[in-house]
Image 1: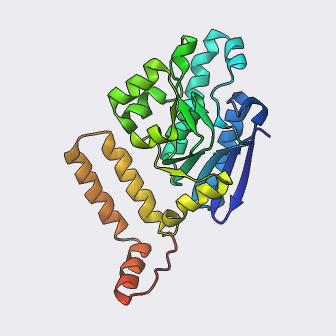
Image 2: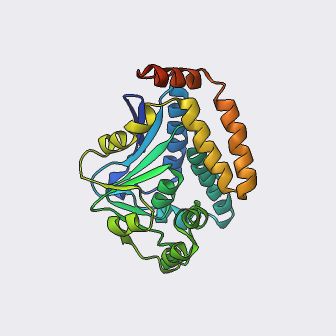
Image 3: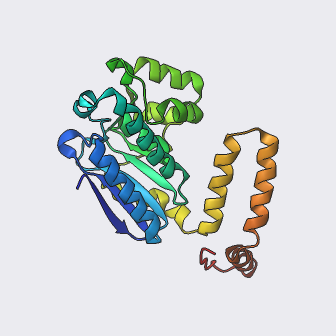
Length: 256
């Protein structure tokens, strides 16, 4: 299998598994990734961690040999399918983190950009190097990177194709945190642990409010936030959370 999924303590660990090719994305891997996300969302788990097999890369990008051999007419369909998959990851009710413990180039960085969070080890290297091949990013890089780090910084990286290290990625806001080396799955789970203990109702609504608000102006975003708060406060978990706070006891959330 080009993707291996393991469930650990309410977290789906989704590992890209082509270490001999630095976990480069090919058509089979994209299909297996779709299945892995399906399985995670159907499992009742609370979050997803994306890692890469081996110690060299999360993912080194698209499989260039397969890309070169593809008929021009099929490129648009393939890109559309990959974008739809990455949109699913971004919009999933399950928060996700990409653990970058080596290379995250091209499509690998675009996968990481689709995740809710990104963490990196000191040896991580990140780039959108498509211009060096006479191409542009096609799996969302030209859209998500400027939204994350700003247009000028994103343009520099996309138009130069240069790679950056973990320290620079942290400085510009591309990654949330630099973490010590270790098992990538454990690093991802440790990062997510403070977030997945809360009500899934509240965390999913908070993320949805932020996503939708970023697509428009402030005023309608605030109105949408108020509507979603009114829905959230009617949940069982909201009642439990407030009661637990007043009683000075831990909340027992049931995700409804």
